Amino acid sequence: MKKKSAIMPVLLMAVSLVAVISLVFLFTGTNVKNEEAAPPTGNENSDENATESTDGVIAHNPPSLDDVPEGPEGEAILRGYELTNDTSNVLRAEAASVEDGIARVNGLSCTSCHAGAGMDETVSSMVGVSAVYPMYIGRSGQMVTLEERINGCMVRSMNGQKFAADDEDLDAMVAYLTYISEGIPVGADIPWRHQNNMEDVPTPSVEDGEALYAQSCIACHAGDGAGIGSNTGPALWGEESFNDGAGIARISKMAGYIQKNMPVGAADSLTDQEAADLAAFILMQDRPEWANHDKDWPNGGRPNDIMTKDVRDQLKDGSMTWDEVLSKN
Image (cartoon, rainbow, N blue to C red; front, side, top):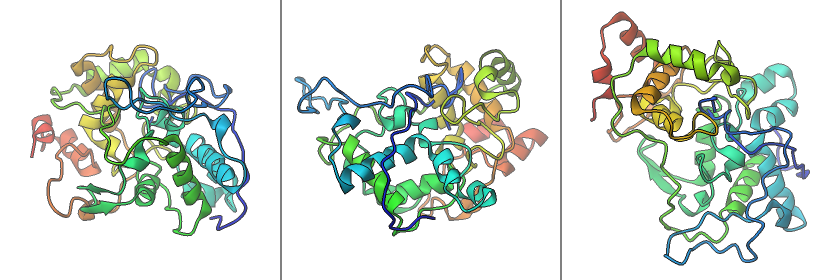
């Protein structure tokens, strides 16, 4: 892992979308429209990056990447953008060996779930995230800093390794997220957050989900779920995908994400039942296992819909029902 070395500004030619953690349907890969497109630049039409509209609602108006300051701060912001937009490719390319790269991070990027490197308002935008951390997270049972939240994603959604506390790449990601959150006050009510959740998930049919996946998702995510690219069709299961400790490994979160964002170009077109069926099919597939489930939710409140291997096995052998999985605490 690189420590306190000079940060080299690199603007990737990349994406606009997650296209997540996208499908022509799901999870993110759908969100990237074209990997060769110019990187998102935020709102180029605002001189002051005003964040509050006339009705008092916070506006989604991240500053342009064309306007990053010169010098070390700008270099850090651009490095943070690079890491956010093309996480796996960047970190694996810089690893000492292929094996080290595979251990460092899976085949996803932050953009796999957070379209346009977190600047797409409609797909899990990260604009404003620096204004809400530190915050209490029930899964951790404590106050969590932005740095800790990033590292949480690294070991769960990215199924890899944390950044060291003194790693400049961690500083760079914080610098980038802080930059795109410019002007949003601490404690603001950010309307585009917490949009990917289905409160009342209908009893799913894995068989119907499999049929719908074959019809609508396979082109971007492949028949084996391995995907075609982190930003064009990310891996939905298998070794290159998120582990079962990631938030998206909950059926309520997966169903909500699918319905809100998939298929690309037709978001919100799936019924609750269709989204639930797809989520169930995807989350019933094998994926890396999170080793610390026993340490999560130390203060109680653990959700029942976390699709661990034990839950998948019990659903398969009939010793657990979907009603039990979907029951509220």
